[in-house]
Image (cartoon, rainbow, N blue to C red):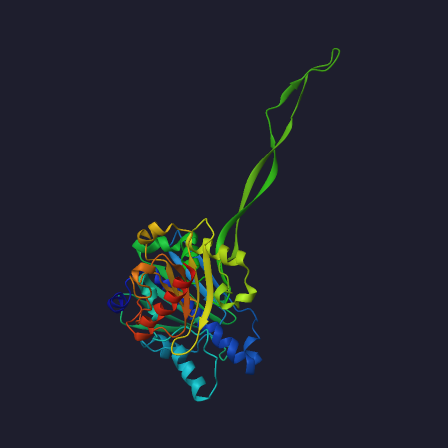
Length: 380
């Protein structure tokens, strides 16, 4: 298991992207199936993803309220590497001649789940399908070629519906269990997933509390004995507590029509995404259809022309179905002389390798920069 996973993935941190994508697919399947079978939502209409960390013990828990799995589905989907439940679901829909239902379904290759073993010694999957009365737990270790499935009997661990992944991190990877690290990865890779993602975060609020000072001696008039009184003072303290916090934005700006987006919104997205403080000189928001379909927002930075050749090439962020894939293409999407252009590209059609880390060579890819060149020549 460990050897297979490390031969597929080169970057450990993508494990969270892959697992969140799987959770999103489970929610999407439930949302689609509930249209014709509303009873699937009887255990709760909320569709979300929740991630909780235990940094002291190196544990990450990812819970979704999606479709869940029966025992047989656990065997079929997790018991066999490269068996994609999403791919099977899409095939069934196509055979039934259903159209345009796969716009947000992400999984293709059936290996994303196993990215959990990039950082985990052990993984437990507790899941309950609305079709089943029982909740089952699948467990496996990174160094083992086998797995176990048992019925969940602990009342405190039962869930109404969906799937809960528990990752027991390796010693060298326990840093991933810090809430701040998880939040940063989510904002980078899964910011625009279709469903709300909540993380368990430490918060605080300030309040005033009374404190006692040392008793002060107060003299009375006449022959009376001196008396002591306590003066009351207050100080500000921070009360700490833990709560769920929404981490992602579910509506990417590029999926909106240009008429709905103001110049201020375009500029704010640019500065936030690329850590810029100046507004861009120009921007273009467009969609292409045909052999290659994608949505894109491109910006010309407020940069002196003589500095253009010094700009780094990691300026184009590629998304596939809203999930961030890479910003390192070394001239694949843009020729080097256009490397100053910044922007985002989102497509459902671009060919990726199995790990979804590398854009495969394709004439579709090579044709993309032609669209971008026309934009740059017109704007700059």
